[in-house]
Length: 196
Image (cartoon, rainbow, N blue to C red; front, side, top):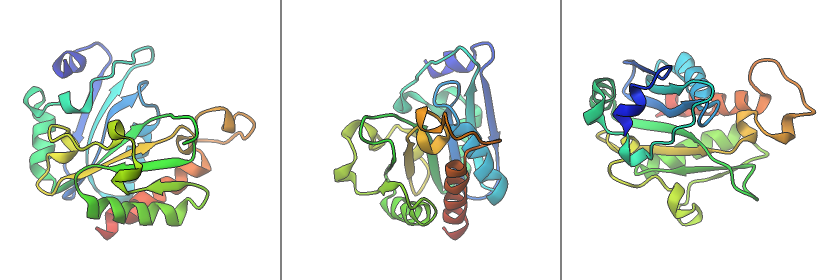
């Protein structure tokens, strides 16, 4: 299924080799909007390696993370071979969790590290790094999830719409470029990457 998505007209796959910390947004573009833009901003500030898949406007094809397989992508395989840890950015929306970020994934030390840095920038948000407080389906612990494939594993960071500058909360708060909350998120993630 992942190889079919990559072959779909208008879908782009981008990989850059930088530091041993990798940033991923493989549900980017029109699917989990702004995750790829946030990834780009963090990469620009830190020199991290990157793996991004962008879907064009009108396409919303969700390939489950456990099926995003490096066997179907030479670029993803090269990225995963290079990095020691990865941070995968995802979008989600749940009632009552509009200001809650969820730090799942197999590298719990990195999850705590990221949560501390993001909390310092986003005082009005809750950043959850305790797996017991993250819904099972959003924990990102499956061993085939690409964020868990690097040598030291990684963190699946689930981002609600508001921190991505999306949703009704922003309708009466116009901004140019990315939202102030998104800028704060990028700053927190950049500090976390640089300090790891």
